[in-house]
Structure formats: C-alpha cells, structure tokens
Image (tube, rainbow, N blue to C red; front, side):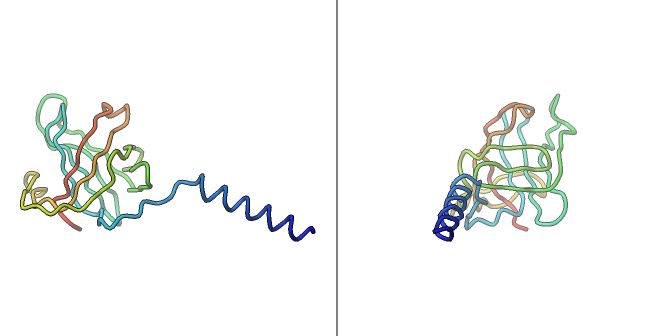
Length: 138
C-alpha cells in the first residue's frame, strides 16, 4: 500500500510539473541570424541572435531619439518570451518559415526574407509590437 501511495504521489508531482513548467520553443526555424523590423518611432530595428556570445537588439536609425540604442546579452527563448540579456519580448506569433523572393533590411543586415515572427517589447521599450523578418542566417 505504501509503494502504491508513493507511486501515485510521484506521478502527481510529475504531471503537475509537466503541465505548469514553461516548455522550450520547438520550431523548425533556425533562429540564429539577423532579424529586421520596421518600428514606429525608430524605423530600423534589428535582432542579431547568436548561438555563442552576446546577441543584440537595437537600431542603426539616426533619427532623433534613436541613435545609439542597442542592448546586448545572452539569448534565451521559451514558448512565451524571447530574451536578449534582460530585454524581454512577448511572443505574439511564433517564428515561421516564409517562401518569398522579397528582401528586407539595410547594409549588412539586408537579405532575402526566409522567416518571420511577431514580438511585443516590454514597457521599457515602448510596448511596441514588431514583425521581425529573418534576412541573414548564422
């Protein structure tokens, strides 16, 4: 009887933890590379997601209030959020592969669009909803 009670308890804990823990995003999209988006205030926003080393979120836009805005840190992602260092984005639309001849970006961030995802930045980054297009693979 004691073994059965212990087994039921372990099974309950396993099922509870499995349903409440946030799962890592499982996607066929290679997330490593450069993603670009058109912002509201700053026109040229980018995510540079690296497998090793510091990833970067920011803009090269020279408009008033935009220049020099760049944040970097370790990249992390789960089913609900993407992190670049302490910068948090809520995932509105999961990354999906795109088959289009269209291109996007600027300078060394320019390339053919191969994937897209929609993210919402945190309150410290204007709570802006941005659709990022992947243009460069790493």
